[in-house]
Amino acid sequence: MHEYQIGHAHTALTQNQNRRATRGDGVLEGCQVSAGDSSSSVETEVDGGYVQIDGNVLEFAPTAVTHPDGSGDPRRDVVLVQDAGDGTGEAIVQEGDPGSWPTDDSGNEYRYANAWEPQPPDTASNDAVVLAVVSIGPNATQSSGIDDVEDRRREPAPSGRQGWQQPNITTPTVNLESGDFYAQPLAVPGDSWLHVWSVAQYRFLEGSRASWDTNWELSIMEPGDPDTAAQSTIAESEFAGGNPAWQIAVGGSPDEIQPYWIQLHNTGSSDMDNEEYWSAQLAVTVDRRPI
Image (cartoon, rainbow, N blue to C red; front, top):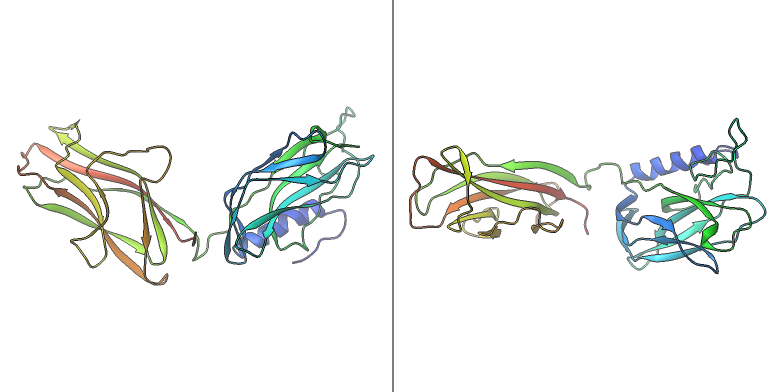
């Protein structure tokens, strides 16, 4: 990466982050940095999560990282995650050069981590993912000497191996006899995960939504096998706990589309009246990150 000249390290840090994101490096989940509470050293706390570096997805456990004590002048450090070599990430600190806080027209010091002085490290020499810039006050020897933490997490730029958002899938209203089903295709790239964040079935009775009926089953059917469900439900599970309602591993080549099917099935013994119609809705993400 190009290493910007001294005096432009803040710009260099941003540009180097952009370059890493373009090649697919960045934070996939979590890894937020906050000031610690140690009274014996200058520490920041880093939440657990996942990062991607050089095409590898690395799990990162929650940890505390120690910064060097402050000198007589303030500085701005950078917290990064690098590949630990065992499938996990490890947090490191790159120390900035001491300098002076900038001041406004009234002479007030601007101590925030996004200040233009003192300069943070440009991180050009680190094959790692930047998480945060941390303002360290003069002579700091404990976490209370941290003036500010700037969140610098970046997701990888979109590429063929990154996740993409599938819009909510809604079936049209249908009227089915006993044992009949309605199905519509869902095109999913191979070698990915299909996350369904919410599942909802709706019964419309003369234009108004009515109660859930356990004689109706909503399923995602395996490609090429209309009799086998990858996952299904006859119990309502809309937005439960903030976690995916379904998680389906999609096989096949990443360069090929797998034709899954959304199926709404009347499993009961009764036909529907003409005034009653059923519809279903799924909120779906196709995640191509190999976690």
